Structure formats: C-alpha cells, structure tokens
Amino acid sequence: PSLALRLLAHKIQSPQEMEALHALTVLETCVNNCGEKFHNEIAKFRFLNELIKVLSPKYYGTWSSEKVKSRVTEIIFSWTVWFPQEVKIRDAYQMLKKQGIVKEDPKVPEDKILPPPSPRPQNSIFDTDEEKSKLLARLLRSSHAEDLQAANHLIKSMIREEQEKSAKVSRRENTISEVSEIVKQMDELLENYSRQELPKSDHETLQNLFQRCEKLRPLLFRLASETVDDDEALGK
Image (cartoon, rainbow, N blue to C red; front, side, top):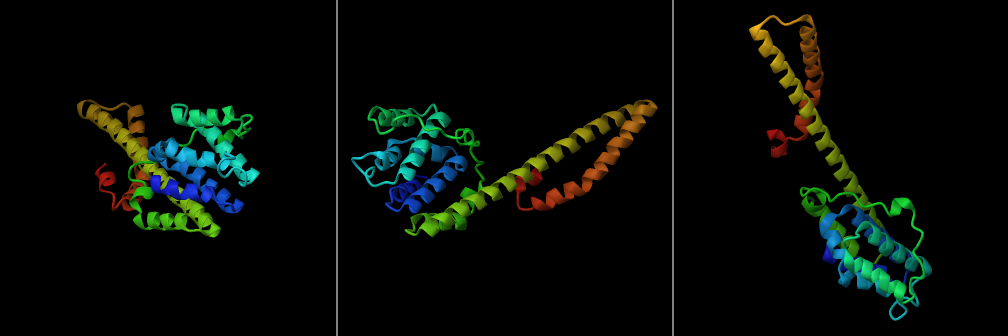
C-alpha cells in the first residue's frame, strides 16, 4: 500500500487537472475496497502531508485547480467521518481549518460519507492474482492520464470479481447449511421411526424434506465443481 500511495500522491499533485482528478478517483476506489492495511497507510502524516500540499499556498495550492482542491478537501473530511479513531486524520483536517485553508466543512453527498465496506478476505484477488497486481502497479507508475483511467477500470473489474467470488462462497455456505439442517431433521424422524410407527404428519414432513434434498442435489454438484481447486471449501 505505501508504494501505491506514493505513486498516487505524485499523480494527485500533477499540474494537469484531469490527471489529478483521475488519481483521486483511484484513491477513493482503493480506500473503499482495499482494507485495513491501506486504511492504516492513508492515516499516516507521511501521506496526509502530500494531500495537504495540494491545498497549501506554501506548496502547490497556488496553481492546483479549485476542482482538485475541492475534491481533496471532501476526501479528507469524509475520512474524519469514516475513521473517527484515526487522530492524525482529524488533526490534519483541523489544522487546515485553523490555518484558514478550509473555511467550512464541505457538503458531501450521503453516499460519500458512508463507512467503506469491511476489509476484504485474506484470499482476496488483490493478494492472489500476481499478474493483475503487477499490471496495476505499472499503470499507477505511468505518467499518462489514460493509464490512470485504465488502473481505475482494472480496480473496478477486480472488485467485481471479488464480489462474485464472495457471492459464490456465501451461496455455497448457505446451501450446505440448509442441507445439513435437512439431514439432521430426517435423522431425527428416522430414529423415531425405528422405535415406533411414525404418525402421518411425520411421514409427510419426511417426504417434503426428501424432496427438498433432491432439488438441492444439482446445486450441490454445481457448487462442488466450482470449488474444485479450493480444498478448504471441498472439506465442508
């Protein structure tokens, strides 16, 4: 994360407005989807100071466009809401207000100040797909604005892939849980049947449970084929 942020800081400080805005879009996408390690890095003065330079007249504030400065202000303000435990972010923002660089809190849309999603799982595509990670790093290092756009598209596609993977895992776990519960109920009914005659209502319940199992069978086979390379999943 620290290398990516160094590269992004350089782009955010670009005198070319579009390049800086694209870099800020990439930054927001990363904050929303890259988890705790990334959040820890943005909360350090080392990175916060790079954002402050864009606003400060002592550094790049005199020639940074108003659009870029407004976006940087919105981002830092939204982080004070997202990460109230991060004292350095709050201190940096308060310093900007005290120095008169930020006159008032920006009006940020509600969807912008909602907390970012929970950190991604350890086996995330961001960590395991080395080829895409290398491509992303190369795009972020580029000096061309179109490469920053490509980096943003790549991050979004990786996030979509991550979400699809999470949805499959959730569907698999829910199905396995349902089947386990059905089998448990059937075992209980059959155990009673071995000791005494089952009443008609229990016969019907047993039949319904069996039919539900039959309906779930194709789904279980498909889920098993999807997790052929996932030993942990197959173990379940």
